Image 1: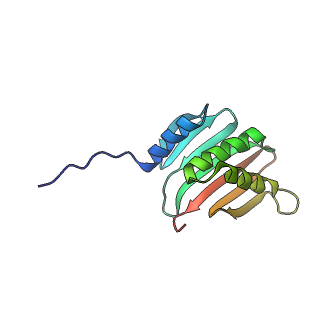
Image 2: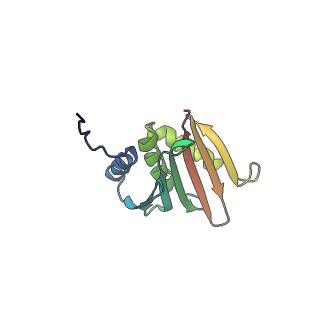
Image 3: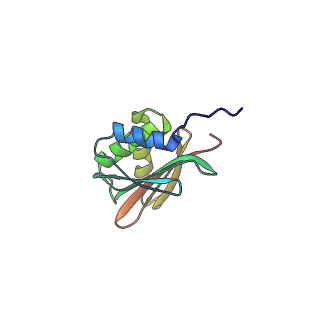
Length: 137
């Protein structure tokens, strides 16, 4: 006899709902290939990458070349929810990543913070941050 298992939402869907409930002004866009596109007035682009072969979750965000404090606060809040770490720590990590961009280290910097991989990059018009947790972490 086969028992029916209850329908369970994907972990990624749960994260998206939690993000929408916790962050004011966040809109949920379409989902394609394990990536959920989000929108917020303080960021040009935000995406949440769900489990893949080599990472468990990934947060990508794009802003102006010099990201405003409101953008860093948004990223810290979203990363705190996604990776279940304190918001203060996420804000410190994002600020540290963006502050390393420049003349000495270049315009593409990768660092590790709290077992997360943070990659900051900038061009002449915009800067991006990608926060990822590896599967083995």
